Length: 155
Image (tube, rainbow, N blue to C red; front, side):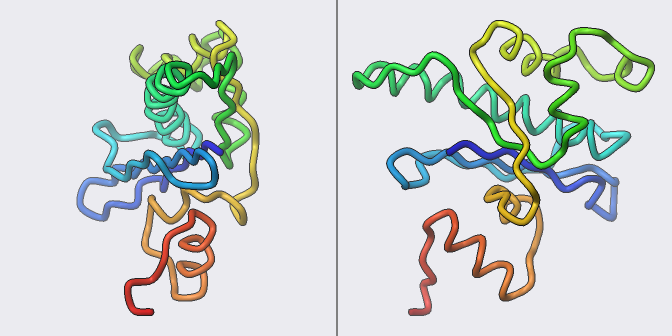
């Protein structure tokens, strides 16, 4: 499973968003990332689109590794909980809402149009990368920690 998520404008100091993604292979997390985005997103869709781009770059790398071990994959599906960001990744038309987005962020669109990556919606309640974008309250943290297959060090 491949998940990408963001938490829009959550940094109180500079209003930048956070990106999180995780990749599972055989039920085990094999790659993940949680970091502040370098540019300020003007909408939640833009922040999510930026997280999809980061995840797509990692997906292409992991696809190569998986192919090398003899399990070929043609298309990788990334799950995201923002329908607008998903639509932006599939639509080659630049609109007034997306014309300001930096060219490097359109990497995801290029890979979707080439058929290397597919983007699908997954609701926030089951978005495993959510734990990588923000602090979660106890029960929610435990739920998402268990979903990505991590164990408590306190057990």
